[in-house]
Amino acid sequence: MALVGCGSAVPSASISNDQLSERVDTSDAWIRSRTGIAARRVAGPDEPLTAMATGAAAAALAHAGWEPQDLDLILLATSSPDDLFGTAPLVQGCLGAGNAVAFDLTAACSGFLFALITAGQYIASGAVRRALVIGADQLSRWVDWDDRSTCVLFGDGAGAVAVEACDAGSTGLLGFRMLSDGRRNGCLTLAQTQDHVPLLGGLTNQRGGFAAIHMNGQEVYKFAVREVPAVLGELLEATGTSADQLDWLLLHQANQRILDAVAERFAMPPERVLSNLAAYGNTSAATIPLMLDEAVRDGRVKPGHLLGSSGFGAGLSWGAALLRWSGPGTPAAG
Ligand SMILES: CC(C)(COP(=O)(O)OP(=O)(O)OC[C@H]1O[C@@H](n2cnc3c(N)ncnc32)[C@H](O)[C@@H]1OP(=O)(O)O)[C@@H](O)C(=O)NCCC(=O)NCCS
Image 1 (cartoon, rainbow, N blue to C red):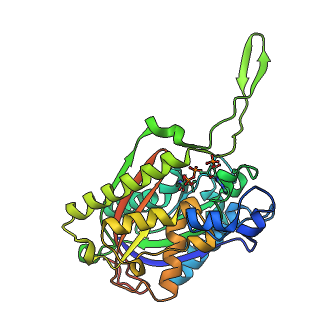
Image 2 (cartoon, helix red, strand yellow):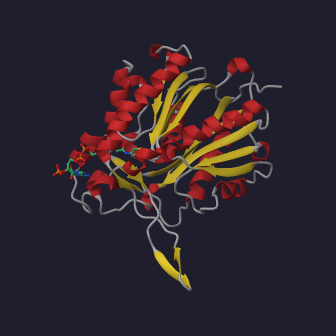
């Protein structure tokens, strides 16, 4: 598949570290030095995930020069759907992409990369010709805004990438690896609340509902700085790629210290490590396409550039993909 278009959308309201310190016992200096984050976007009640995801999707369609009817598949990576039955069909409806099947994929902060790889398999099999892969999250709905150890980290956003079948020689997905470890699930959860309600007779029912995000920050940090270099290193070796052949590192934006540690492991100079953490914080499934869209539009990422990408997060889940950006106007296969 070729990566031929991208787009993004974020809520208009931005909350700075100083503003946050009016609510919880924290400071701009602490947050910046530990995470690299300076501000985050937060959606209001009238800005549902569907609208943000649709905005990013429409921008990616326009960038690729496609009509909504051209789409065969819409994959929405999210952990904060508007509807637990699926938000991708709502996005499909808003776009008017009547020929596309649309469904959600949940893998937390690895979600976008896993969805992109999944779309790549449908394209490789010949089942799909054109797909839109969206990463969108509004974790502001699910953080405890009185828990300073988590509320400073997350923000809302959406990004999307348009992918289509292409000749084998110009593929945008040169290799990938995906991993999960459910034994370490407890490190980072957005788990169901235990809310038992009497039903009838002796029967008790579990009512639906979720607790706020719970995280063991130090464990997640250690996981990321160990597993991300490992999985990227394995991928580079498997594809016969050396780190200096990469134009960019495009990592999930969780913490600047994690980005720096991974870059150091591959001796990548800071100017080749994409980062927009300062403005957006961790937007979960959205970070990678949001970052890609920014870097494509400001001219840093150019057609033909090679990107080493890695997503990681709750599950635990993590993975890596070697990507080549084509941009609009790439000739499609057959
Ligand atoms: C969350 C994280 C920034 C915390 O940094 P840390 O250096 O590990 O900090 P600790 O958790 O050890 O806490 C150190 C102290 O800072 C305090 N602290 C925590 N959050 C704080 C905040 N927002 N402001 C001020 N102090 C804070 C703690 O209470 C603790 O105080 P104590 O020593 O008096 O007990 C860091 O662990 C991290 O980034 N982890 C990865 C998280 C992540 O990326 N998650 C998403 C993955 S997809």
